[in-house]
Image (cartoon, rainbow, N blue to C red; front, side, top):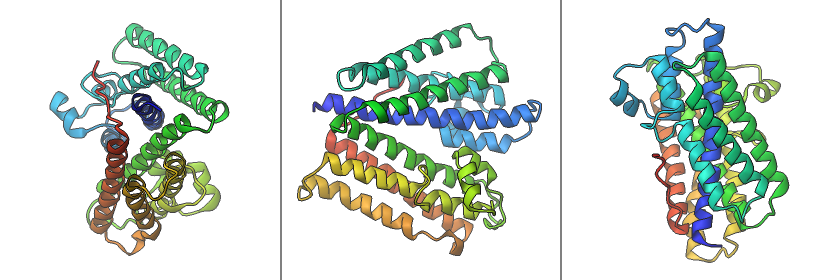
Length: 320
């Protein structure tokens, strides 16, 4: 398979996963605002966490100076100054789908193209600031489209190289995002706090884990929630499951286990899996837990960089 095609498939999957996850995270917070009658001062610390998870607080403050909800929503959804805005990631998904039309189901390209054109129209006709109910409807459509895409990929694509490059992109992105969410939640805790006493409900909501977690566990403190999101063997967004799926996809791409390329990727991936499996935050102070999650995030990012370098998968610019 041509490197250019592998590149587009990999990044299409990463941006598609990023789009769906960020849309879900924003929808969680918008629903919180609707329940609080849209009061800006409520859940402002949650908005700061979302900004760090979905983009960069430093880059936002360089443009807006202070955190206010309406500019923040605009920044996360449509700003040309934010390379991770939904508008930018949806554009990247559509462009990569166009490049790989011969390697993916035609319905997948048609779906990405149609939704991008719909989004362009929505951005043009909507007045600013966007009403919360309209934004919630838009985000619902983003997520519904993403779920349809997932179904098409799973049910229509042959299990060959294009499929597995997309799988690697999807699972790297998901693992990295889950680790980042945990890290940001830890960083928001007062340094004197006990993570066994902190509330983990918001993190469960952000990670789409509330229902599955509550079927197995009664306590929703932050420590228990984090251990679940890191190590549960069955929840499809736990870091452990993501890394196992990533390993499985990688094994299908690189079938010769004696090559230097295989060793260069398998060694750090196994090290990260081991580190996640052995992680016990109950014996860590808050500072130690933050440091540990920073290390795991760096390992995940470094693996992505190594995989991209070996297969010549270079992240495109998302600026218009």
